[in-house]
Amino acid sequence: MNKKQLVDYIAETASLEKKQAVAALDATLQGITNALAQKDKVTLIGFGTFSSSDRKERTGKNPQTGEAMTIPAKTVVKFKAGKALGDEVNNG
Image (cartoon, rainbow, N blue to C red; front, top):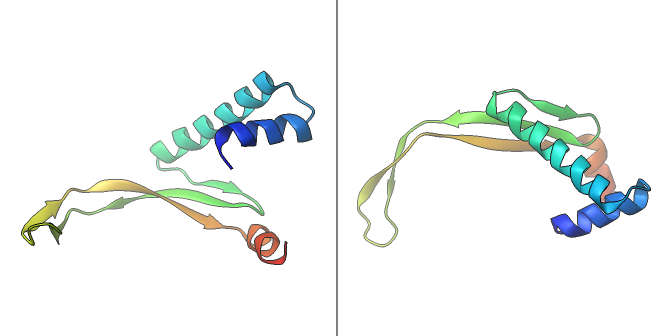
């Protein structure tokens, strides 16, 4: 499912116009993004938890040349699915 299909689904199931569905989805995603940028967790009970963590700088190998290279530190986003989501996906 891509963003357009998700917007269509939201508009249909929530009885919204597509413009309203786009605005709702964009606001939700921006809220999650802002929280993660501030190192906050976003927990949606039954769905899952978004979090961010810092990954340290480390040494790796260039796959083309085999040379050692430094992989810079960065912040990574994590998602842990909630029990209800996992159950729904597994049991249909």
